[in-house]
Each structure stands twice: as structure tokens, then as C-alpha cells.
Image (cartoon, rainbow, N blue to C red; front, side, top):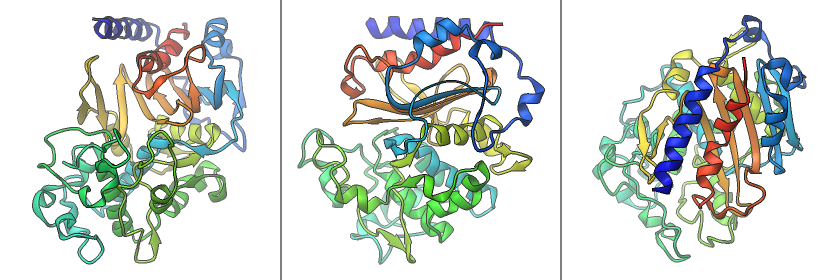
Length: 384
């Protein structure tokens, strides 16, 4: 009942927000940051300033709110780059979007036609032309419906530590799994498709135009996640990642996440999506791909009604689009929230949105509902 009540409250709050939505200033569509974001007071771009400031988190590496291309609020250090857990899934899907834009593949192409894994993967039952994998498409990977099992985080010697377990256990498309080790096979396949390190790809196709030098952000290699203890609470985490660690001499980035980035630079990535893939007159990602990321393609089930998902982006409702990930050690969340209707981007790195309390069991603990609703409360502070 408590979950149902919370869900109804979210719907009511967001419905109220929609009633106060403002049209985007045409000048804002051509406004992009230089080396730094241009500043405005929240009240100058339509916020109830006092109400907004009351919502700003007190605990976090960094966070920034961008509206109409202006920085209107921030906290922490905006230039500190740290590991952002699953937020990086949206970076992986952007590599796929670029491939679709370039005509290298279509979303519903079988992945095995690009890479079977034969001779590279450790066991024949992992080959992508074997068993359920023959039906596996790029869309399945990006929507977390690949048929790969959920990662067992319940004990150090669980399935997460068994590399032989990382294969499709059921036909693709049947069930959503968020902790899907198929994301690793996805990044391996994308590396083969592009014949290039995926970070290098994004530097060349995206980040150099956003004004983000290659040395200012990072993306952990899969082997580094496998070999290092990222989350002491889950000692075996990352052990499900399996060779190969490189394909054709190109390091394979950790497709399930672990991008290292600052709040300010994450906001630039989000702003690219807010502007429908366009940056200073250059179409970096097709508008067609951006539209697809905003349209439900799968759904995570849950006690509060679940949540829509599309191409490695969350769709929590009423036009909000999010990339997010929980950092388990910090019990805090990194997220990029994009709200086209309000011309808004919010980027936060390792932030606890309920700082007066401890998130008792990471992202899906009792405070999860309050954390998820935070962006909706921000929208409430926008007035006409």
C-alpha cells in the first residue's frame, strides 16, 4: 500500500508540473557552453528560487542544473571525475546509435552476424551463433532483454563469480534483467563492430565537439572491473566479466557502466541529447536515434508499478529521460536527467538526495522512491 501511495503521489506531482511547463525560448536552441557554462539566477529562467535551493542535495561529489543552456544551480565540485557505475550504460548505447546512424547495423540485426565469439570466448556455449544467442539482436542488448541471467549478488561464491554462467539462459525478448551481464557481451560485440576502442570512438564522434578533452573523462576497461574490488559489500562483483579483454588489439570498455566523468561534463553529454543530438550546428547523433531513446521499448517490473526503459535510458514518466547508476560504496547515485518539455538537464555525480538519512540498502532500499522522485520535485519549482 505504501508503494502504491508513493506512485500515486509521483503521478500527481508530475501532472502538476506538466500544467506549468513553459515553451522553450528559440534563442536557447542555439545556446551552447564554451569552456564553462554561462550562469543565470534560477529566478531568471523560471524557477521559484527559494524552493529550488531547498531541494539541492547537501552530500555529493558534484551536481549541476542547466536550463535554457544556462547553469542555474550547483553543489560540490563540478570538475571532479569519478566512477559513475551504471550511468555509463547510456554511453554504450550511444556507440550503438552511432553505428545505426552510419549504416553499419540495424537494431534488429542478429548480433552473431557481426561477431560469433568463436575462438575468442572461453566456452562454445557462449558463442553468439549457438543456442538462444542466434536470436539475439542489438535491440535486445540495449533494452536489457537479451536472455542473460541476473547477476547473483547475494553471496561471494554465487553465479556472479562463475564466468561459465555468462550466456543466454532463455530466449531473448522474454524478460527484462537490469543487472544483465549481457551488457559485457554487448560491449565486446560493439568493439568488434567498430574495430575500435569505444572510448576512442566517443572521443572522435562526440566528446571533442562537446569541448571535453579525451584526458578529462575515462571509461574503465572490463578487465579492470574484473580484477579490482570496486564494491567491498559484494566481494565477487565483476567476476562474471570474461575474456576476451581486447579484440583486434582494441581494449574493451566496461559496457555495463563505470564511466569516469564529472558533473559538468556529464551535463554536456545530457545537453547533446536535450538538443536532439545537435551541437553548435553539427548533428552528432541522429534525431531519429534520440527519439527512439525516449520511447518505451522494455520495462523493469517492480512493486511500485515498474519503470519504462529504452536503449539503456530510463523513462520514469512525463517526459523525463535518465541515465543513472548507484555507487555501492558511497550509497549514492549518479544520474543525468533530461526533460525536453522544460528545456532542462540535471547532472549529479555520487549524490545522496536524502542526506538526512542513509540509503539503507543502496539504490533499491527504502529511500529509493524518494530518490527517484527528486527530479519531479525539481520540476515542481518551475513556475510560469
